[in-house]
Amino acid sequence: MAYADAKHALFAPVRPYLSWLVSPIQILVNIPQKAIFWSAEHLASRDHLVSENERLSQDVLALRGRLQKMNSLQAENVRLRELLDASLRVEEELIMAEVIGFDQNAYTHKILIDKGFSSGAYVGQAVLDANGVMGQIIEVGAYSSRVLLIADASHFLPIQLARTGLRSIVQGTGDLTMLSLMSVPHSADIKKGDVLTTSGLDDRFPSDYPVGVVKTVTHTPGKPYADVEVVPLAQLERSRHVILIVVPEADRQ
Image 1 (cartoon, rainbow, N blue to C red):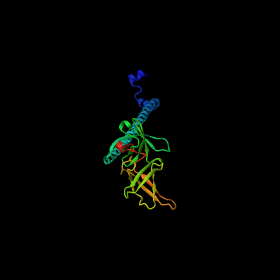
Image 2 (cartoon, rainbow, N blue to C red):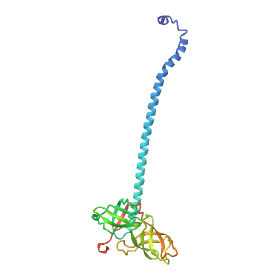
Image 3 (cartoon, helix red, strand yellow):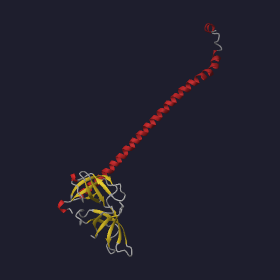
Image 4 (tube, one colour):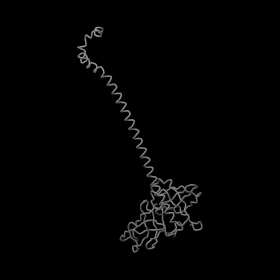
């Protein structure tokens, strides 16, 4: 049949009709192959998208980490500039230090700094940040020292009002955001917004360094003294870099 068709073209008139009848069969036969090819291509595309998505997620995470680091460095630069400005206002000899730890005890407020007696630190030394008095050194090691913050309930600091010169003592309350002014007569000229500075009467803290701002003055009948709340100017819970004021050894208490 094939020879006859090839020699005499016997099926030439019906070949188009035969092709038309066979086409659906060819299509059906090719469907599994095309389906396998499409599935493989689809899976490859999906795997590529998943891989690309994971890579982009990692890139975004890395960029966010770098942005956080940049924000942190920017904030630290601001703090260092503030500390530099504060050091220019200090007349005494200075030692720059960094906070490297804090006490976990909830009943005390102490920090650890990276300067010890090998750097000239000593017990009783005044510690400031860029905004005001932070506290004083109570323990000294070779390369680190422990600082008692002015907010600690056991800390007392002689002060004076910048506006009137009234002298008193400010005591820590155990709250990093609040101090208390002791023994203020009801007749004393003191009001909200008054700035307190060191008086220099204890020979540890040189005079005229800012300590806090009066927040409230309450006069309670029957009480011998007014209740005066003071907000510390130093950022006791946040400052990372601090200044140690060096008082001549002959003048130390």
